[in-house]
Length: 373
Image (cartoon, rainbow, N blue to C red; front, side):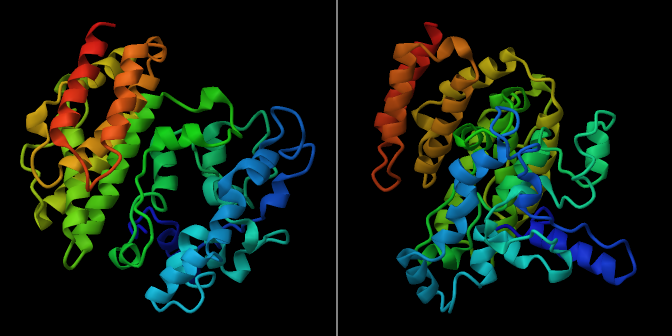
């Protein structure tokens, strides 16, 4: 789990210190029930059913804390000498984040059992709950009151990435599955409790998310005493993807050619990737940008798949091709292109069994189908 300044635990600590020094007390979390009345987000209408969608369909509602009670979680906890995974911060930070909220910041309807709840994403509601629907309130007014602007892709990515990318090496070794953060695909997979127009451009969301993921991975490696080969390969695979996909004409920060695994580069690329994510989020995105990036990535050759990180490159590349294709409506029904993409997914599915030659051939088929469009 990430421990950068974007992590909610660190943010909470900063607020607590500010309070201790006489600053304004942080806003309270009021709990999902404060949003759930039938006249607000608990109604049956399409524009008032957000709480119902979250509570009944979204895995963020009950599944994260419930996961900590499974036999697999017990095995991981035993390996880590954790007595109770439902109470240990190494587990609850992501699976039950409300556990860490201090008693004085818990509102009357606050419930720790809510899992990843409304305020986990939208921010503590005490100062904006009653006013956020006022017609005279702008987005800036809501943000100033403490409501997160999740339509901003940079803000959205930072809200999600802390629990969807990095896992500490000892937790992975104990049996926790690896995580890959991909903002667009994971947002599309979510049961929607927001309107489609607020989703943003899928290709843009993909790039912002990948840049934020790279920042988090760079931070983890920069702070690791002895990074594992697997951690380094995952990092270099994503660095390669973004570096290969650069275009100076788009107007985004460009990464220099030296991106070998070193402490200096981990720190340098951590800063650069954050700048990239901010710039990509504020860019006026067009279908031409999406197509340009898609064509560049489709032209990777077998030379791109040599070295220890080849399977990791393919893993990230396939996800990128999928999201860029999905962002171009005219490609969604292209049968040869979709067949080639499905084949690439199959070839990249197993890291130990990855066949670079077969993947490069599959990528050539994909590129040919794209050129014929």
